[in-house]
Image 1: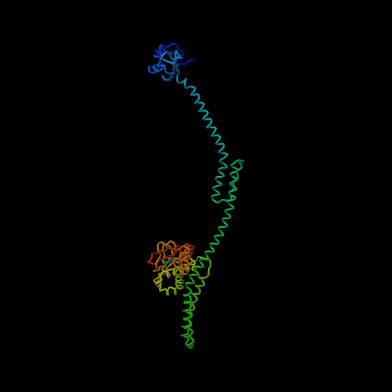
Image 2: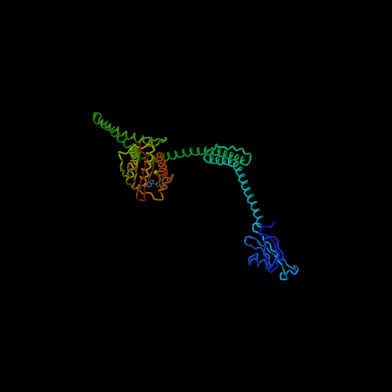
Length: 414
Ligand SMILES: Nc1ncnc2c1ncn2[C@@H]1O[C@H](COP(=O)(O)OP(=O)(O)O)[C@@H](O)[C@H]1O
Ligand SMILES: [Mg+2]
């Protein structure tokens, strides 16, 4: 049955009902049942839909002479009135269906993805974990995934990759080990070469160091011969002979020590003593080069953890560098002191100095500004390496024409 508000009517353009059905149109005239504006539209002879107080009103003219196609020839209006609820019921129905379907599909998708992801994430997590482990260097890590699908294939590929990586790594390790050994050997060779070069520089001085006391000894022996019956005199000369022999022994000992190569081994060492011994070794060269040596050695200097032999090589290079930097002579100041718990040995010269450009390169191997044949360019790089081996530091301060100061800092022993 028709609800309240529903109805169909055939209306005369002046508004009077020709026929009506249902409860949508209750009056005698359409103008009683619809507001004026809506009634105007309906009766105008056009086709349309309008909304009236919650109802939908649809209207269309029925031409009385359809063949003429002219409204003006006369028409009635067919008008229908339906509550919105009824009109949109089907639309709402559709919407409900769609919502339900939507939710259903969503829920299904969720359930499926959960299911899938549980099947996926397990193996994928294992893959991820494996990759991380591999990255951390656990090269013997392997995956065992038995899913019987592509993931298992990936895991298999992963394992193969890990296998190859492990192989490559072992190869590489072996190569690095070999190269390191070669490098170390080459480096030891360089250290030896630098030392030999330094010794070469010293050779003339060393000959002198030995010849001087030898002359003295010969003189003493001649005097003793001349006065064979003067025991007091003989004793004095014998003392001098002994002193001379000691000097020769020291020089030869140092020479031997310096030319021998052995492993670096750290033990409590008297830094002042190392400096004195090395200065003695270079003494002749320095004097010949008109270099005045000023010693400011701190007698309270604590002992350092060091290798006297290698430290001697470092200071010998610093002294010889200073000597080379003062071609017209100058002053070499050797100072020791403690600073912030370090024992410092400072070697300062009044030579040509080092330019800002060069100062960053003087520790590079083979960097030398000395005429070829005179310098190896290895002294400072070897010295630096030796001090690093000691856990120490090397500082340098210089400016062109203002001399240079090298400082070696070493750990002290309590
Ligand atoms: N005391 C110094 N004064 C000026 N220049 C220096 C001094 N010590 C080192 N140098 C510069 O650093 C360079 C490298 O020194 P080094 O490594 O001992 O090699 P080499 O003495 O064989 O040249 C020297 O050639 C020189 O140019
Ligand atoms: Mg040098």
